[in-house]
Image 1 (cartoon, rainbow, N blue to C red):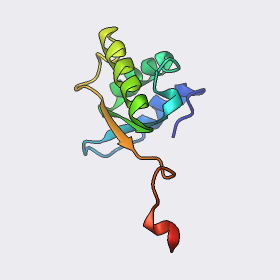
Image 2 (image 1 turned 90 degrees about the horizontal axis):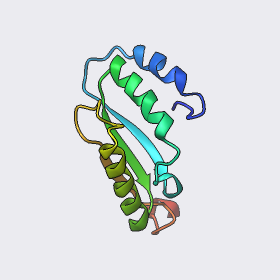
Image 3 (image 1 turned 90 degrees about the vertical axis):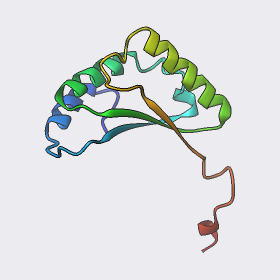
Length: 109
């Protein structure tokens, strides 16, 4: 994972990927990051990474419904501003249920 505070290394890291298989870049977010206010500079880094190697952008959100709505609204605003116009397709949102939300059978083993 590339540190968001040192994003300049990300395009260099991407240039080392030699596989020609289609892949996704998955960005994990907490519900506190769902507004994407932190990400304006990061979208520029994603643009440079996409120039090196095309990818499908996926946001993986570990949160409840309210954070999903917030992320969807934030992504709509980002798309309207053209900050993700370099992508070949719109980003995808996936939701991961927090582990503490429900009992997990494996927790009892």
